[in-house]
Image 1 (tube, rainbow, N blue to C red):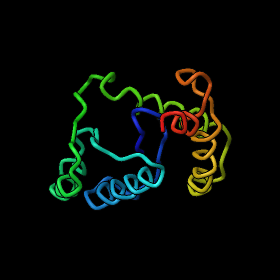
Image 2 (cartoon, one colour):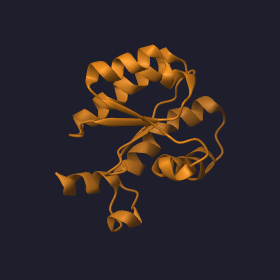
Image 3 (cartoon, rainbow, N blue to C red):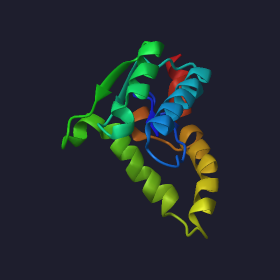
Image 4 (tube, rainbow, N blue to C red):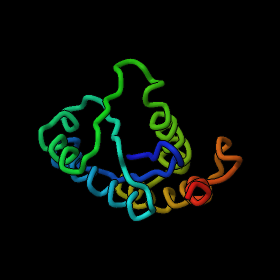
Length: 138
């Protein structure tokens, strides 16, 4: 998952693993997705997982001119928006209704994510959605 720091607009994809090819591919897809919405990435914050410290991931960031920031270990506040989004994702999507399988849950993700980005109100934005917050910032 990737979350825009200013608007909380979220991009999520289900990956087969967290290896360098998957994390780097996700990075490229997320940056394209955000760019299509008028958001240009300047910095990327990740943990120190092997997929994010891999040379391939660093090379992609360097080629794109994006600064890599790492979360501080055991310091949740450095990654608060992502942690909060994960809580919302789990409570309102993953476990909100029973799914027949993990595949059916994954198939429902785009629907839920569209609702989150375009309709779910956020108190920090005066009950506006991330997409509405984005429209107000441009």
